[in-house]
Amino acid sequence: MTGATPFLRLVGVSKQFGGVRALTDIDWEVQAGEIHCLVGENGCGKSTLIKTVAGVHPPTTGSIEIDGQPVLPLDPARAKALGIQVIFQDLSLFPNLSVAENIAVETNLEHALKPIRKARMRRIARDVLKRLDFDLDLHVTVADLSVAERQIVAIARGLAAEARLIFMDEPTASLTRTEVDRLLSIVSRLKATGIAIVFVSHRLDEVVKIAERVTVMRDGRKVGTWPVAEVDQRRIAHLMTGLEINQSIVARDMNAAEPLLQVEKLSRRGEFADIDFTLRRGEVLGIVGLLGSGRTELALTLFGMHHAEGGTIALEGRPLRLNSNRDAVRAGIAYVSEDRLGLGVILPQSIGDNIILAVMKGMANGLGLIPRERRRALADQWIKRLSIKISSADRPVQALSGGNQQRVVLAKWLATRPKVLILDSPTVGVDIKNKQGIYEVVAELARQGVGVILISDEVSEVFATCDRVLHMRGGRILGEVIPGRVSEHELEERIYA
Image 1 (cartoon, helix red, strand yellow):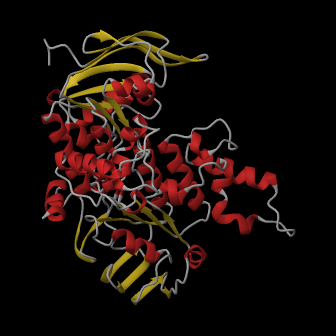
Image 2 (cartoon, one colour):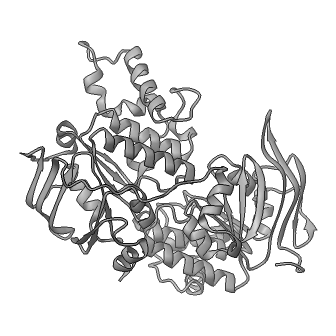
């Protein structure tokens, strides 16, 4: 990609907030019609770089060019007019508005004093979705869409605003593998029309699959830019962290261990049927499957959030009757949801308050109050054990990186001293070093005798952490594999067959 004038060029861009330097001397280019991946650990400067190009943060020093022309000073309105669109991880859609209204929102803002022409909005939305070869009901509200469909709406909104460069910040973090493949197909279609895509992702398998070039950042600096053919996942991980990340197979033979959780013929109409498995003490049991396979529905039933309509659950040989999640917690079952922002933590509340949420009743004194020293001691204990990087337990959870937020969710449930811990997609949106830290926590819990059920979309993840893996499809368990006895590729073929 040499010779042609790049669509976007940064020269010597630095950004300082008070005494903190977030970006240092960034030289970077993106060509028109290029799929370019931007990777790095949380806090490396990726978000600051994106916001600088989008006109949110003016650079302290350096220059920015579009089509070879300097564009500073740059503000968000001018950046959009130049064709720069950003799809942040939260998508920034209007959940109470329709698909058509969200896609054509920019055209409404341009004519704020004129009556809204809904027919024109629907025509714009229909035309853009046709370009993406995607069909959505234009009248349905965005709140009623799946996460994958909301991603499509966000992309369509950018196209309706005549985007020439789209930043996608962790677009696949909450998607299943099937939805990811569909999104990557749409990204390739955008490239074919000359639109540049900067793809930010912690899923390195996606990076090497979709990108033409990859730029690695660390500590606010650009480590370098490489053609993706010259780097593999292991090399990218090393460039991001400076560490050699070990993901060797750790499966153990757990047949001699004591049965801990026994599930027989468990069924729930329309979700799963005849589920049989035994989780042994200290075992890490993986569950993989496509969207709709029943994985999460099974987890919610084991945690008492859904009621089974048939079959039995026994813990340590004693039958369980789970009418609520409180029953599950009392029995010794904990559940870390895949939706950590919606169900795992209360973002505005402090780290300490979140950690004690599930054990508040047991911490109260005779007056029903929780002594401040007791709260502090428990929070500090788990912050230290899980290496949560914070300056104070009184900081709000929303101020933490994704990896540290996930550790707070883990701390909340580990404080209940569970016998069984269910982890549903625990590393979604977490950078590679923090993923490794979570894997180490899982291994340590298993050594202490906790039975762990790990649900994941990533075959490489279950192979790096689990002793056995169950494959679900259509609400049933189709089979069991032992990492190492079959390859990752063989399991992937079974899942996607």
